[in-house]
Image (cartoon, rainbow, N blue to C red; front, side):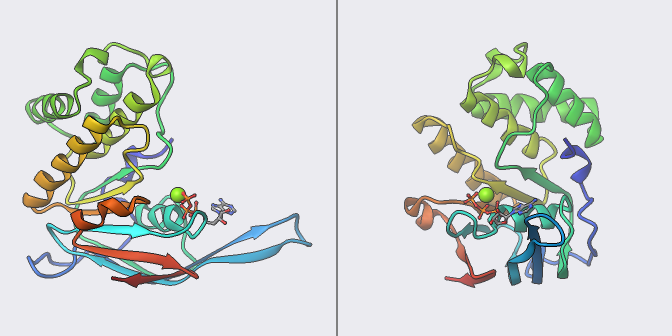
Amino acid sequence: MNRAPTLNAAGVGSSTRSETAPILRVSEVTKSFRHGLWPFGARVAVLQGASLEVGPGELVGLVGENGSGKSTLMQIIVGLLKRDGGTVELDGALGYCPQLPELWDKLTVAEHLQMFAAAYRLDDATAKASTDRLLEELGFARYLDYRVEALSGGTRQKLNLALALLHEPQVLLLDEPYAGFDWETYLRFWEMSAARRADGMAILIVSHLLGERERLDRIYTLKDGRCISS
Ligand SMILES: Nc1ncnc2c1ncn2[C@@H]1O[C@H](COP(=O)(O)OP(=O)(O)OP(=O)(O)O)[C@@H](O)[C@H]1O
Ligand SMILES: [Mg+2]
């Protein structure tokens, strides 16, 4: 569990922000994994020069077949995985919603929110305002005192998303954040994204559903280790 320290910790360079410049720029990133037992295994190249950009206020999709490397690329941007080559430039605080919620079974929803607020170094008033807003938007205030082990899959996913948004980051990475959401929550999710985009947040979202394309400013398709823009 190492999501909280990813705030501002992608291990990447920083630059002066401007309204037009990308706030996230990934250039020619390469990554391979060894499969099979050493010394018989072989390295399999997953990313072979993946590049993408997201500007302030942009909502950008990342699509591709299962196993094409979408989550790998996100983990490299966040700094959870080392890249073999290429560069990642990021300007501002980062929020990350992993594909599989990384939560502590024995802690309550409220304890998760408090712990992440502390990790993000939010003052009490900001933490309360942000927490109240997210509980209201996602409609899960009644679960505040529930331990994670007692939550449904969809409610865990709501907490996963709320933790990524708690500090209102400048760049938000979402890896299939709505898996398990009911229809109403799914629509609410897109409203929330639109509101953050209007405030200048840059959002990169892994998505599988073709119906979402009209909601996105741009789509990158990850194929053969490279990102194709459309
Ligand atoms: N830690 C790892 N060790 C070895 N191989 C890995 C590791 N992580 C990912 N891979 C491999 O890298 C490839 C890309 O995986 P990744 O999870 O990034 O795909 P994805 O595009 O997110 O797929 P999905 O749509 O199913 O979520 C897969 O072949 C996977 O087996
Ligand atoms: Mg994935």
